[in-house]
Length: 377
Ligand SMILES: [Zn+2]
Ligand SMILES: [Zn+2]
Image (cartoon, rainbow, N blue to C red):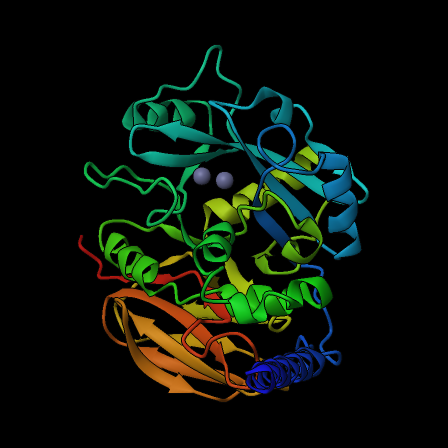
């Protein structure tokens, strides 16, 4: 009997050792792909959207978070503390540790959570009714984004306003939802948390389907949202927004704030899963009368429009051009041109095909769309 117990214990110990070796091996060979030879452009800046601080239910203060953002080479962060609006967070905006700190608010409204950005402070509180809040934000010069439509406080659809954006990945959701499924990788949180985070992300296809559907109604832009409340150091390296500016980011706060919000309002940005690979240098553009138009633009379609994709990365990838939600063209080349002859919404997804803890069904890069519209005059 004793011998049998000993055998079981030895077997379990061997199993545990095998698991520990397997995990260590995977963690040790994990690397974030980088393209060191690429020259970084001052017209492309990187930031993180949807961060909670101690102004609401986040675990770290803005000063601590700004320091971590600076160490992670982030140009800007967008705070979204809870509140209708959150005054403390709003008045904390400025340059901190060389990082541009902008603050919107995450409003709790009748349909779910709505993020308001670039608004003037209202005299009282924003309404709890979604449509009223939408108009109040707009009247104060701001714009709004639907937060985590299919998780946490799910969004209830219905009357659809011209929201500027929708979250297509929400980091907090992925980490909470997949914690059990990712149990075998969780010890990595102590050694290489980025590895564990990448393992926990799941396919955003439900959000993407909805986003494509909404784009049939009017242009709406897609956001990778961190929704960080804790573990900020690794979290700040998980997801990035890449904005394309028309001039390098100003040192003057008001000008810089305007540059960032203008790029977001016009959809001149793409999203990346930064912990998997650095995406700086990706471009998706179109040509209209021999002029280059960037993501977010609407182009009148009177003859086929060349759409150009630049993905100058030295690691293997699979680039999908998506038209009205359907993949119509794919390539592994660094530079692609496609003649688009049909009206609708065109956007790009890039999948990493190198070995990575990131699931093969999760796009590493998601661009904002270019809209081709027939001239209806
Ligand atoms: Zn929320
Ligand atoms: Zn949030």
